[in-house]
Length: 67
Image (cartoon, rainbow, N blue to C red; front, top):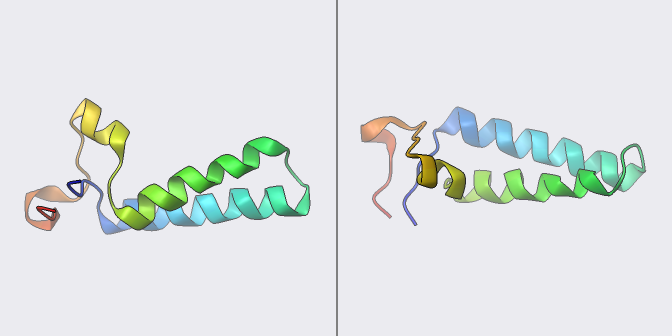
């Protein structure tokens, strides 16, 4: 899977995902807070399937990994 996300994009996804999961764990938000797992995983992997489908890269040509 090719990486298509830059470091800022990855960090923001992980932070938002952790906040959502944390809010779900504490009962502040409902079940939908568990959707925070998706940005955590995509941020950790550095690849977003939606970005691949629509042809978006936030890492630039030199920053993208060929893996």
